[in-house]
Image 1 (cartoon, rainbow, N blue to C red):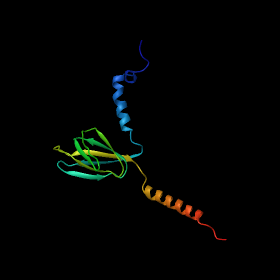
Image 2 (cartoon, rainbow, N blue to C red):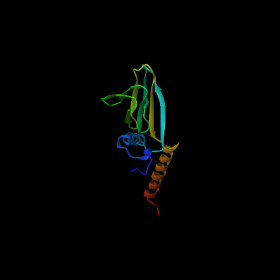
Image 3 (cartoon, rainbow, N blue to C red):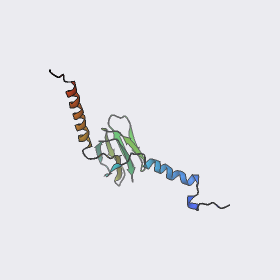
Image 4 (cartoon, rainbow, N blue to C red):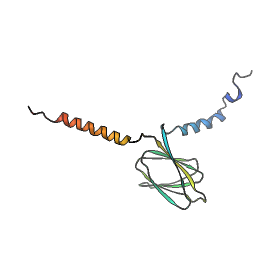
Length: 137
């Protein structure tokens, strides 16, 4: 008996497993997201302070990653990722003959979101001060 679906839509567990795994990894970060792409030159060490929790993804060549306050170093191969926390400092280098490409992806925050949040906190604090002040009769 023939299937009602064309061959492209028939389920094959072996063929379907890989795209689903890739889709899960791809959508692991919250959306919208912002990505910074840069190259790590050979025989040079770059340093980076992470301003927001992010995912580091390696392309083209292996990268050696050192984290501040961590006893471990990481050798990441192309396609591998590493989660980084806000405020963390990392050092990146490669021993390959060609530059390693790196992508740092984090959740997108609107411009001046920190200033807006700080202003709202200040306004709430001032409102509490005015409510707590005893009124003179």
